[in-house]
Amino acid sequence: MRLAQGSPGQWVVLPGGALQVLGLAGKTDGGAQRGWLLCLHGEVLLDFPDGNFVRLRPGEGYAATGPWEALPTRAGSVLLLVAAGS
Image 1 (cartoon, rainbow, N blue to C red):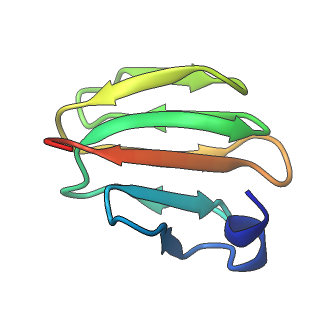
Image 2 (cartoon, rainbow, N blue to C red; image 1 turned 120 degrees about the vertical axis):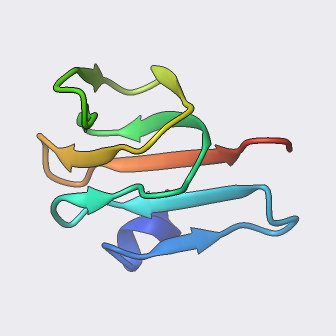
């Protein structure tokens, strides 16, 4: 979590490559990123092109199978991505 908070707005790839963490500094486009998203700290709003959204609190996760955007709703929010197929 500290690695992500030290590089806000940039995905940090953890050893092994299947895990990435992101300290959210603003709205982030998930684009082609697929897999499980887990909120490690703060609170994150996942927004989808069809108008739906999901709010994640610490310890909550969501399986992203399509395009998404993440917006932090609390300072210091951190997302963990477990890439699909890992």
